Image 1 (cartoon, rainbow, N blue to C red):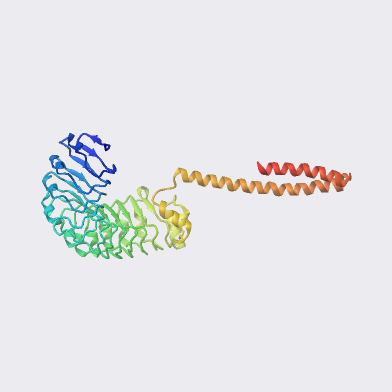
Image 2 (spheres, helix red, strand yellow):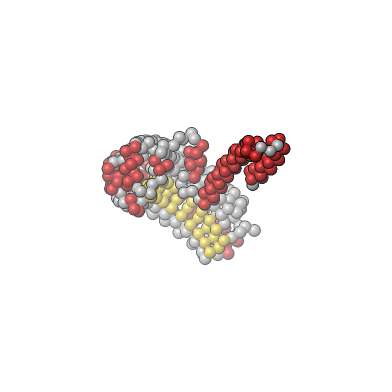
Length: 381
C-alpha cells in the first residue's frame, strides 16, 4: 500500500511510483490539499470528485496525456499543477476555474498555447517554463493581476513592449532564454522584487532598470553584459546580486552607492580592469582576490565551478582540499629528508676516510649501511 503522509487536511502521496490513485484517499473527505506529483499516473479515478473541498491539486511529473474534465467540479480549486506531463492541449473549458490562483503546465509537449488564460481573473502565479516558446504569448500580458511568472528554459528572443502591462508582477523567472535586451520601458514593472535572467544572451540592461525600487534579488549571471546601467545605484532594496560570468570591465559610479553592508554580490569571471579591481577591493574589503580574475571557460577548474558556484565551499570539500594539501606537504618533507640522507652518507664517508683514517673500506661500509637504513626507515614513515 502506498505511503500516506497525512497532516490535518493535507495528503502527500508524491514520489510513490503510483500507477493508480488509491481509494484510501477518501478517508478524509474534507481534504484541502492532495499531492500526487512524481508518480506514474496516466489517469484520475472518478471517485476523486468526492473530495468536494479540494483547493490544491498537484499532478506534476506524471504521464497524463489529457486533463480530466471532471476537475471542473472542484469549484474551490485554487492551485493546479500539471507541469512535466505529456499534455498537448489544455481545454478551454478550464477557463471556468475562476478561483484558480496558481496554474502550472510547463514542460509539456503543447501543440497549442491556451488563449483563454486572461479569463482566470484570480490568477496570480503562472508557470509556463520549458515550452519552447520563442515569444511571450499575448494573452499572458493580459493577465491583469499576475504576480509570479516562470518563463525559464524557453527560446524567447525578446520580451514585448507590452510586457510592462504586468504592473503587479513581483517575481520574474526567465533564465535560459535567448533575448539580448529588454524593452526600454521595463522599469515600469515597479512591483518587481525578484528577477532571474541567468544563463541568457543579455548584452545590456535599460536605464529604466533603476526605477525598480522594490527589487531585492537579481541574477544576470552567464550573460554577455559589458556594463551596468548608470541607474543601478538607485536599487537600494537589493540584498542579492549575481553578476558572475559576464564581460563587465568597469562599473558606473552609482554602483558604489548601493547598500554594500547588506548586499551579497557574486563577481566571478568578468573582464575587470586593474583600476576596477582596486575600486572593488576598496568598496568591498572582504572580497576574494580570485573573484576578480577572469576565468577560462574551458578549464577544468571553471567546469567544476559551474556545478558548485551557487553555494560556498562546503566543509567536506574543504576537508578534502586540506587532506590533499597535507599529503603534498608530507611528500615534500619526505623528499627533503631523502636528499638530506644522501648528503649525510657523503659526509660519513668523508669523515671516515679523511679524518679518522681507519680502514676505509670496512669502516665506510659499516657506517654507510647503518646510515642508509636510518634514512630509508625515516622516508617510509
